[in-house]
Image (cartoon, rainbow, N blue to C red; front, side, top):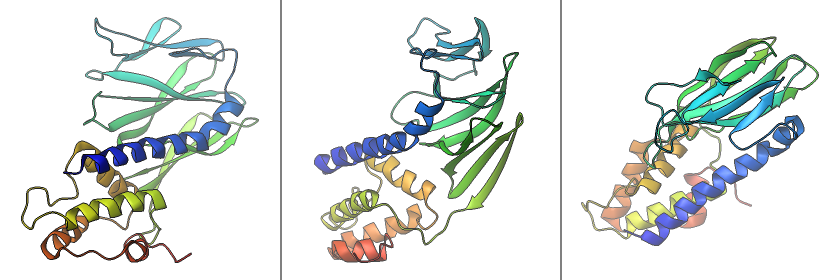
Length: 259
């Protein structure tokens, strides 16, 4: 196995998450109460929210509202406050929760609607693989917010309006181009397949944990890819020792138009 390439994939995954964080940062900065934020906790309409430990270990897995336990799912190892947005009559707190460890990247997400009297928990995403909840539209002077994320080859749109949360799913475009950095990582994996002996245990696109989740994220977040089809392409490269050039790969596999 090529440890160097796996390290590159891990770095690419981290960069991917960082870029998406930077994309939502302006919205977060616009709506965050700079005087109320603190590590592990926030103040929303006068209510103090804090994530604390529920046991003797270091896992942060309970969310408290004004010292009263609000969210502490059984079997969950962490609860994390991810976003805080202000509307006219509500504060919206986006929370993720799940298991720790490199092999557990399917997390649950909730939105807490705080109106100054109570915090109401509403499910936003369940078992979402490397989920990226993005703000599509936010009306600080109104009571409406629109969030989007990708899951199981669908675009999920969550609309919060006047205290209610509605969800809508739409199929992703199977012809949507894959991002250039992800395509480059995928091409690197196929190059490894080409250099692997036929029928070898290592003739697979999955391999290490980093490669496994890199492939799974691409397939989950894009409609035009499948693990089975990528595995077939890998086995073909193993058996023939041939692979199309990088430019052709970007055009035919990742659907990029020539520059």
